[in-house]
Image (tube, rainbow, N blue to C red; front, side):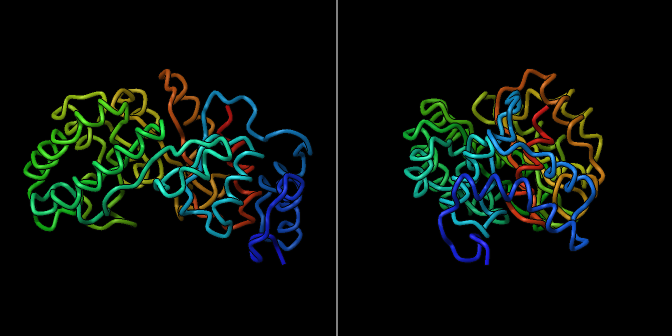
Amino acid sequence: MSQESIGGRVTRRDILARAAGGAAAVAIAGAATPALAAEQSSESSEGPVIRNNRITQTLCQWCYTKLTLEQLCQAANTLGYKGIDLVGPETFEMLKKHNLVGTMTPSHSIPKGINRKENWDECLDKIRKSIDATGEAGFPNVICFSGNRDGMDEQEGMKNCAEALKQVVGQAEKQKVTICMELLNSKVNHPDYMCDHSKWGIELVKMVGSEHFRLLYDIYHMQIMEGDVIATIKKNHQYFAHYHTAGVPGRHEIDDTQELYYPAVMKAILATGYKGWVGQEFLPVHDTVASLAQAGRICDV
């Protein structure tokens, strides 16, 4: 039985052994891709797998729940990740114990967002609380969502979002926190979501007019909705404060089973002068730690 299943403490030796050998084990069973097996079979038994650190990488906790949060923090440290994404203030003490950053603090729900004024009291209250907790911890970002259309005109929704955000962006400026609205696909994962194209999100950023409100450019979601990822990043990088990864199709490993070549995407991000975070947000098919090791190396350009 694995450490994942019994909830025991994962040691550095466990993690390195699994990063080196986990893929080989599933390869024997016929489940791993050749790239995963080759990547991990050559893994060094010493030091992190993320070594260049020109891209500062973080992990979206909700994807890796076979590991407890503490196990994920241990794995992050060993592999060379610097933060954990999409975890709330109740986790900040543990993250700091492991010298990790809470790189994106949650706030309100995805479908019930700030495009409708009747949602403002609930959504803005949660955003304010997240801004304060994030700022007090010295962490960088708080996430927000447009919400679903539900028949609403997109320009009306954009105007409502801008009005809502202007009520909280001053607080974010004071706390040195950036509010990030995530771009999500409405074809596969989030039907009817309003902020589903980069053009719409960019226009919203311009309307709000603050460096402390920008977009979370999710590479997986935008590949599904509009493609042309590298060109979009090169042209519009000033509107993007955070990035997420995942393989298309399927939202699994970012290896050669999917249609994007992530080293080229990472190089394009670097070429813009980006100094923020890239969050791994894929749902692993293979061993969690082995797949995180592989993804870390793929993005460590």
